[in-house]
Figure 1 (cartoon, rainbow, N blue to C red):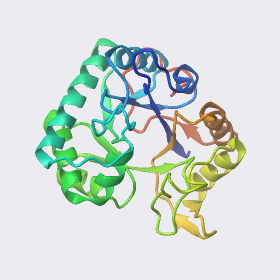
Figure 2 (cartoon, rainbow, N blue to C red):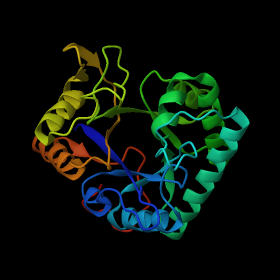
Figure 3 (cartoon, rainbow, N blue to C red):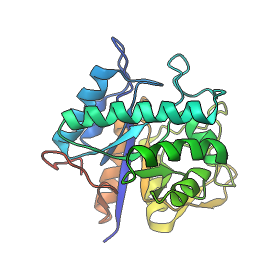
Figure 4 (spheres, helix red, strand yellow):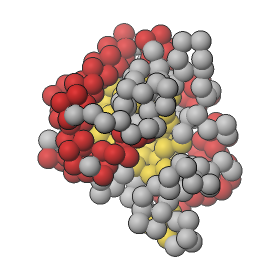
Amino acid sequence: MTTIDLNSDLGEGYGAWTLGDDQAMLDVVSSANIACGAHAGDPVVMLATARAAAARGVAVGAHVAYRDLLGFGRRPVSVTPDELHADVVHQLGAMAAAARVAGTAVTYVKPHGALYNTACADPVQAEAVVRAVAEVDPSLAVLALPDSELLRAAERYGLRPVTEAFADRAYEPDGSLVSRRTPGAVLHDPDQVAARVLRMVTEGVATAVDGSDVPVRAESVCVHGDSPSAVLMAQAIRALLTAQGITVAPFAGSSGSSGSSGS
């Protein structure tokens, strides 16, 4: 039986501001990438999101990022490897504590936004991120694009590398993601996105912006939680996969209390 993980970036509110419908997404996805306070999230939001994930048996991941609240972590930041290493250690510690209090545990790490893009391509930043993960908890998996510097670094440090595809992002012919600054980079139609994911899972390909097929190797598929149609897309994906006999489940398991519809 084919199994795939469905992950989403959640816990991205801050103070009085909310972003996305985390509760609805947690009813659908199997893994939650929870913001750790650098690009979004605060202690209250982190703990509440971890508790909501635990109640549904959804796996918890640390969504580490550049320290850039104003730019939502989507702007490149000039940072030394030691500074980045220390910041990732700090974020992981905060998320691990919140998860423990919530009755669950962090099982993987996925960088966010500009850090994800940079560390996937830059071996120096990839090494800084992965070294922090390995030193905090070597049992954690690292989630990133196939053939990325992040996953190569994870292998060197003995961490589990987990390949990821994106349901709602357009792909370049070389397999990289189309820049968010480019029109059409972010997809919104639930049926279109669900059909894309089904091809990714069953055929191992995605259609690039030039119409060509790009190989996609993914143990997990991401739906961004901040998209206006995020919940509808996630629901459409899960419904189509289930109808095709494909099981949606966490790639890294979970320590939640119920293991209900989210797993």
